View 1 (tube, rainbow, N blue to C red):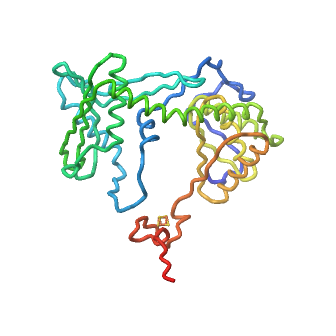
View 2 (tube, rainbow, N blue to C red; view 1 turned 45 degrees about the horizontal axis):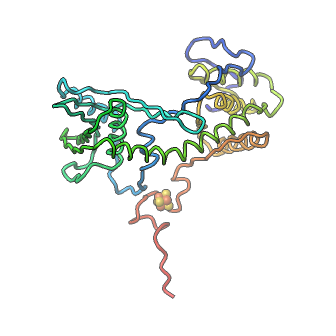
View 3 (cartoon, rainbow, N blue to C red; view 1 turned 30 degrees about the vertical axis):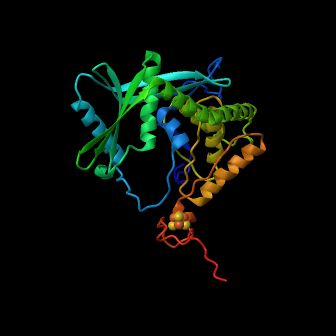
Length: 336
Ligand code: SF4
């Protein structure tokens, strides 16, 4: 929400298009599907199950443009490969789950068909010294193995290779790691990974049902003030049409509830899984928290979490997150 400087409330659809649907309210839902599809990317799947790490800032920190650089390195390596290299191959498999279908999908950086062998190539740009890399990182291997499974299972392959291609981004130096898998062991591994993820996806599926039921019965919690209904409807239509809405309105209009309520309604109708409410000041954050509490008091079942800058919650005078500096987490030694 922007600064509250304008004297009148003004809602602007920046796309320049007129939103036609749902002029009177929020009834824009489509027919529900018999068995809904829950999608998870390969990256999220492996990161959810296998990710680990810490906030120690002595580890090498990537520059701000690391993502763009990573994309550039990917394209550079892919262009250099021969005719047997197929780049950016979309892969997807769907598995029946408890009341829904779980789709695992992603895009392999490259698939190589050579000498009767199939190799899945996973490219990683890095700022680490790759000469000192003894083995590929387990998370990267897991990602490549998932692509290997998604590609090899429908083809009935008996064996498949995986190649991790590390590129040192500043120098362009490249290092490869290869591994070959029998499909039976790969399948066993993948099924294990999926079973571990299912514990979470089953839980979140059930919770989604509870949340959806609570949203369906949720009324706007106050009598509408002047212009508030139109504002809420405009927010909803903006989400429905996947547009952007820039809004400027003075204090007292009720912007928080007028934006949160339609966003929650849209979430209940499958138009989003997470709602991010960003605030520049603590006071506006508090209003958002109170708004969620009001809606919960009216029956909404929704989990929310408040993210705060670590500088604000740090126990130390300076936020230097490493064991050499931070005394907050140093072990306390009792000498008596
Ligand atoms: S207490 Fe402060 S410096 Fe220490 S780990 Fe936490 S945020 Fe970092």
